[in-house]
Image (cartoon, rainbow over all chains, first blue to last red; front, top):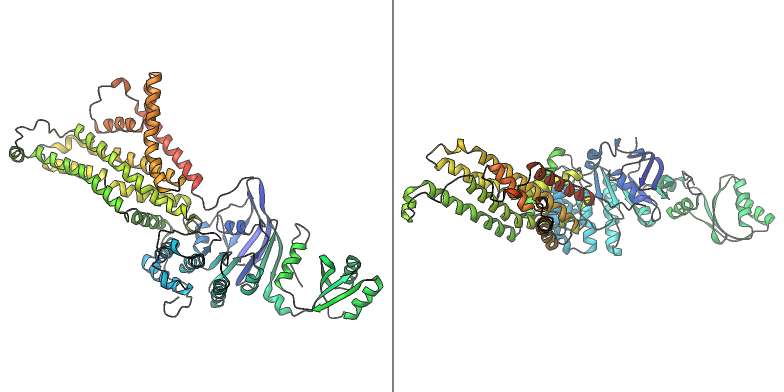
Length: 313
Length: 291
């Protein structure tokens, strides 16, 4: 059983299918949720929180059905929404305490943990100020504080670095890393910024047009230490890439004659030159490099629409 | 977590039952409502009529006090259903500005800052959210409506030399039922309108308008068509008719304008359903754009 299990999950909003048959098991300590605008990231989060009922299939969080066991699921989740969402008329500590009490903490415990959470995220000195006097960065932090105060098992962060300046972003990333390393909280982080996901997550789910474009363990990919190569070619690139696939290489083509490929152990670089020479393709540049999350993302986006792919590089 | 260590620690203590979360909302709503000086001012104002009625009941039951102020007999100081009808009317209409002030404070702060996604991501349903706010508003209005009314009834029962209470139990029941119906209507109307109007002052005005504008329209309908059914849009008229029957007070002279109890009940239920539909449309964690 994973942290989040999706079983043919389909969500319709009106007549539109927003999530289309998602199936997979997310098990990482910190799971990144990537995808272009409209891919269904926020809808997936809202479905996990029980805001949208699935039209088909199920979504389970810690083995609990997101619809049927909605209250228990929500009780185990701390949620930091993407947009501004707070009660501006309340002081920071009162707001966090209120949210903690709603999550089920007794009043005394909630107050204690509200103070602790605010100090933890760095808002200790301003905790008695009204929330609507906070800066944008502070508002992001207080959303994180209220999500942490209840001591959730799963922390859902929707675009946590939105609108933050570089220093505040670094502080937020550092906090997320600390929470991940502490180990008692699982994280689901939705972001447009690949760098944020790359720095904080060990597993990534990439959505495209409401379908899973890729689901992979970044840590494993990093550990695999396989040989990646980036070529810049001139000539019949498509035919060349077909030929090197025939050798057993995995490759992805990009505009401008760029090809990224993984070379199996039994293939020599010389073999590539031989094929290129035979097909009249000019190799203008050749770089050996490790794969990055950007590559995984771009390849997932390049996949045929609707094809679910477990990326293995 | 710890204030001095600044490290995260998981929570492994006890958790309150899910059904009690409604009272968390109610408690915070109540505190929010009463944090305003205007609420305190309106509350003080609402307690003035019961003090006047308290003095009247005291005088009606105390010949020495009457003699001291020069009132010779108990004439004009009959403590009966008619007097309690006046009391319930006064208290109910004093409760209207209080409800108009408090209801927007309970809802609009949450809506203005888009707090619903965070609030509803906790183990609380939309119904639970509305119920919590409703309880806060009902509790606030209760202290100026049926509570002082019943306290005055109890005082009259205690002061009267005659076995007054047993003969007038209908008044007590009428006071409780009449005020509960009124504050329920006011609360649900206040919450529904506040959920649609984000600006608090506008929401306060909208609540007043929702009570009095249809009454004006109803008056026009009644005048033009010469029918009593126009009064079905007149909440003050309907409520007065309802309170009169609940207390057992004599009918007014304009008996031809009397509305059937069933029609009044149907209109009030319809109004409540309409407000519930308005709340259902607005109190959502996420707006879904159909398409």
